[in-house]
Amino acid sequence: MALDPETFDALIDTVRRFVAERLRPLEAAVEEADAIPADVVQDMREMGLFGLSIDEEYGGLGLTMLEEAKVAIELGRTTPAFRSTFGTNVGIGSQGLVMAGNAEQKAAWLPRIASGEIITSFALTEPDVGSDSGAVKTRATFDGQSYRLNGTKRYITNADKADLFTVMARTSDTPGARGVSAFLVPRDLAGVSIGHPEKKMGQKGAKVADVVFDDVVVPAENRLGAEGEGFKIAMRVLDRGRLHISAVCVGVAERLIADCVAYATTRTQFGKPIAEHQLIQGMLADSKTEALVARAMVLETAAAKDAGKDVVMESAAAKYYASEMVGRVADRAVQIFGGAGYIADYGIERLYRDVRLFRIYEGTSQIQQIIIARETIKRGG
Image (cartoon, rainbow, N blue to C red):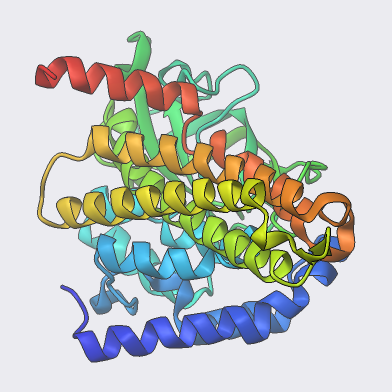
């Protein structure tokens, strides 16, 4: 159920001020330390950001997809690592439980996820499995009472601090996606270990690492849905996650455009502000137009999802376009700033590196193209 307009407007205003006054001044420090300050994380808990998409009955805000997208746009106006701090709780780390969990599972976990007491993570990718997510090799073998989980997951967001993993593992020899099941795996189970966080191109402060399962005994009641439904659950989770990431891309693009305008109207060359030069105006026009298109796609698709429509294709299209769009906007921003855009002091080169990941996670651009084409053919045009 949507929030009443006055309450939602107050939430947006609070998030907007939090981003502008609290988060943006910390961007360089987060980049340098590769860590989000603990007091900022606590502020996020108190604001309810960890429970944006979790129903109110479990302590969350229970936002609709459209409301979540609008909040995500605001959160996109700062370093993406801040959003990533609670992003798995809002999206891929919790939504399998929200969509497929039974009453007991939801009651046991969702209130603590919504409060930020528990950090969640989504473990699908493996050393040899990425885009072909139905080919997972991690194995969960049932012994009559519980499952024994063995395998390695790779590039898992928030693995370093996660308390609960949603793990996709093979439970039968049935080839492809039909042999994959989903499990809730607490970090403190014997045999779960976390690798050292990877060094990344961008999004410093948001960590990814390997998660290794060595003969981990997982209670049967921790399985999400029936055996063989894991891939279906994962795809449903990713549909929503793609829209969320698309909205973040819009926010980052709008931030970059505002920064470009501020710089171009004060930087003088050939006797006048560079904003008055037509080739600069052309880059600004292209960036603004593409950002407007992406915003419209995201909000329209989010509203359609809330209305119960099939948005598999539209979510993929929004994610494909928005993630590619923000890359182009960031590239133009470096060009508009010139030498300053290449220097760390201005933050443009940081965002240029940060946005590159958007074209990879939640499904690469090429996977989105495949989904878009498949769904277009299925619908007859």
